[in-house]
View 1 (cartoon, protein in one colour):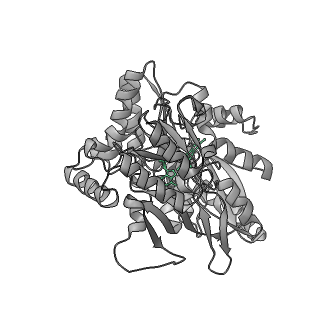
View 2 (spheres, protein in one colour):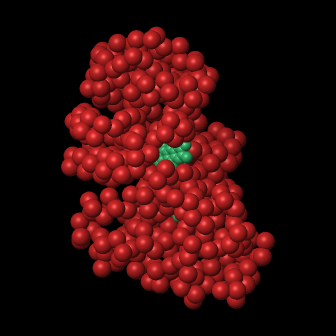
View 3 (cartoon, helix red, strand yellow):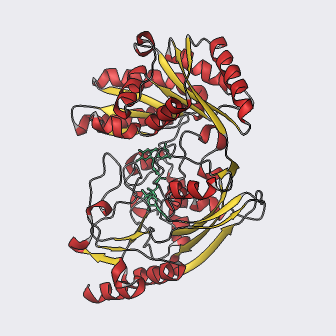
Length: 461
Ligand SMILES: Cc1cc2nc3c(=O)[nH]c(=O)nc-3n(C[C@H](O)[C@H](O)[C@H](O)COP(=O)(O)OP(=O)(O)OC[C@H]3O[C@@H](n4cnc5c(N)ncnc54)[C@H](O)[C@@H]3O)c2cc1C
């Protein structure tokens, strides 16, 4: 292997290659609760498209798998390498190449973090509306997982906000997909195939992103006596035009734990945290004067829909509550959650789904704490169980209950390796065969993250 590593070093430069014990521990894992850390065979940090092309050719010649890594904030183990795989870190593929304020698009290299992008866009009065809970995430990682987040209910997920991408795929071919275009009816949409493909079809080198104006925001917390009452209020909120940009559902105890963990004082009366259901809602308008009117309207709609308490938060508290919600992962991890389910169901089936989840929890004697981007049907269940085996059984059951109601295994975290079994269980054989065929077209040598999505080992040809 020594010769192969020397070749790698000559592609990316010796300073950007690490092998064996030289690979820092942070490259061994992502933030998944269930995927064990594993040290890659080697780590490379390419700097540009030419180096990516050479890397792919090297991997095909040497028959060594490549697993791309952005910031490693993923929740499905997608960036975790096996000891036989080379980790391709995108950290040097960083920077915002262009901000076009007329077309309202930005051309951004894959390793750029959401935080860095936002910093650049602020100078132009613009923003990128995709905001998964972790702004260290890279643009490439968000494209590869089709990341969602709290604001997807209003602005859509990554799919609706990426207009183009440059992708290095099998054979070192460089695909330029889409463009600074808001519409396109010109053949198969390969860009949409690449979005959400989790590094199994190629390496995203850059993306063209749709931008929006920055806006003023107000945040409030509402309480409803029951879960179904809260879901009714969510429906009512979505009839407002434009609708709220955040509609989050939490069990009161979950809100209390998150606020406590984040050091946020909510100032809510004790009864509101005792039982029932909580909604965290944000409204935003470009014109600050319109925000107060939007808050008034949303408050009236909530009360009309049966909310028995609505508290408008100050700017600082509002931001802190949204941050605490985004950081919920760290709270539930500290409290000992064994897994986080990311099912999405049709919004009309949410009440029914929550009832089914409660029944599963009671059957197995486990605690399933619900939070969720409930406006778009995406439910996150933190699984607290005595042991790994019972957590596993419960996850299988609640995922199956979601799929039975027309839902999907993952709403936004992706499949990675953590959810591969569930994905295989609930996909049809035809779907898996087509997936495998698509992967072969992009990646005939099978070097991009084999054994994950599109791989014959998970049920394709
Ligand atoms: C506290 C916290 C809260 C979160 N909240 C949310 C949330 O609300 N919504 C949400 O959607 N996600 C959420 N996430 C998950 C996470 O932030 C996203 O999955 C993110 O999109 C991954 O980006 P990354 O750069 O960290 O990717 P990584 O974890 O490095 O990789 C993720 C996957 O993408 C692939 N990949 C990475 N870069 C590329 C590339 N350039 N080309 C091809 N493939 C690539 C990897 O191989 C892997 O399969 C949260 C994570 C944390 C830690």
